[in-house]
Amino acid sequence: MAGYQIRLRANDVSKRAFNFCAGPAALPEAVLQRAQAELLDWQGRGLSVMEMSHRSDEYTAIASKAEQDLRDLLSIPSNYKVLFLQGGASQQFAEIPLNLLPEDGVADYVDTGIWSRKSMEEARRFGAVNLAASAKPYDYFAIPGQNEWQLSDNAAYLHYASNETIGGLQFDWVPDLGDTPLVVDMSSDILSRPIDVSQFGLIYAGAQKNIGPSGLVVVIVREDLLGRARSSCPTMLDYKIAADNGSMYNTPATFSWYLSGLVFEWLKEQGGLEAMEQRNRAKQELLYGFIDSSEFYTNPISINARSWMNVPFRLADERLDKTFLAGADARGLLNLKGHRSVGGMRASIYNAVGLDAVEALVAYMSEFEKEHG
Image (tube, rainbow, N blue to C red; front, side, top):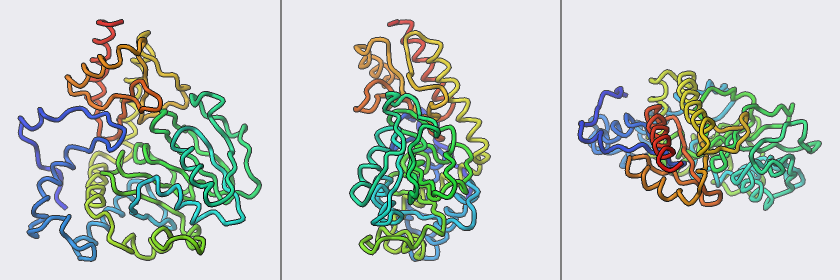
């Protein structure tokens, strides 16, 4: 595949805003340019990727390269399958217990926010769920240490969300549960820094934050966890069926898969996850540092549980929220409104959001504070 040599014209660049949306989120401009150039004529074939048969040699090569690039980025061990599935992360809330929770078994869940609670509520439709730990006593501003957890004796797995997109609460550690498989929702922090995949039984991530466009979910599952689906599990939701068919038991989300592959290639060209960690560290340190130095903005999350990807903050006077958002929008700082369930502001600073975007945001926040503080 050709490298990212295409550039927007100067007048096109000026139209690009800084997008702080939590999802669907910003995509790297180079990826969008590449997709634009190939949209009508993919590599001289005279057709779009969206028009290709998923069984064609051309598309299977695209899919294979995307998987290999993801394996390279995350150093995925050979005894893990990588699945590119439809349904988003929310469908995994049901798919996980249908595949991993025996009808007479129990699964442990950790509640750190809205998405982990949703996954737990869905799992209860299929079997026994034990609430092993909850951040509720800490008002969801901190994560209880593992010494506080109430674990089951023989849990089929433990599920948690490594990063809560809405609340901005992130694990900075990986639970150590011995032989109990860890199942983790990494929708909003996958690919933001290196991880040790071998610590987990199953990792899943909705694409529309750090991977690619919506319509796709990536599942990384250890092979010994395949083949455990209940007899009542629909064929389309059986991980082994998906793995045995290369994620193509039916027609996959071909364009989302292709675009995700371009993002993986872009990440490798940036220097991989070690380089992304350095960039993401600089971005979050700048933004949190400014908030902490201000008497006008606040972030309530415990320092060791602050998300690198989703930074919620509040103004000293919430009556100024609309004015703040209008001013931000006028400056091309988009999608800063907090989730409707918590209010306030939220800046999502995923891989595709550059340091220049955070610098522009901090400059505006400083200006707004001087005017209204």
